[in-house]
Amino acid sequence: MFISTPIFGVENPWLLEKEEDNIDVYIAKVKGSAIKTFRGVVTVDSSLHSVLSVIADAPSYPRWLYHCKSAKMVKFVSYNEVVSHVVTDMPWPFVDRDSIIQSIKTQNPSTKTVTIRISEKPGMIGKISNTIRVTNINGLWVLTPLHNGRLNILFQMSVDPGGSIPNWLVNSMLVDIPFYTLQNLRRVAKESQYQ
Image (spheres, one colour):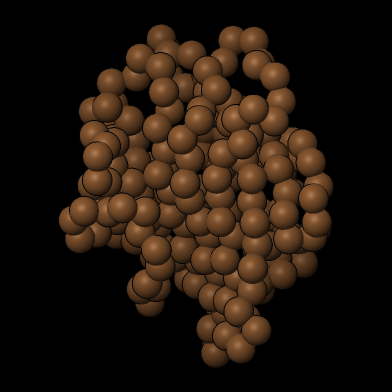
């Protein structure tokens, strides 16, 4: 199932880059940027509640969010809005990245589809030593309950990690990020604490 969502200035059609383990990963060029954007899609045998519980549990991120080194909630604004601090492990010789992520959740009352929009709030906490602060993040989760009790998950993100990482290297990682994130999320959502 393919979901249509806002595409953050995508200038070309989404190209299917990987289709494995029932996960589809798409890549597209972004207007005005040498760094591309990704979209991963999977259908899982988990409830909306289970997957939302995992996504809301910031300390669990290193278990399922690809290359996440640590994560914690910084501010609870409301049930529908939280701010988290995430540290991403970068390959040597590059410095780890950290980001302050604002997540705003909405739900369509008729379809029950939940959309979580992700953006950066870089000035919310001070600089963390041995990291570079990411200041350009635009993403979303779209969780769509299906009639057969399954859940369709779309994970889309456009990120500029900043610093001296070559654009070609960033683009080379864009297939692995959604693929392994969705693969791990599917596994973690089945654990008893998220039921």
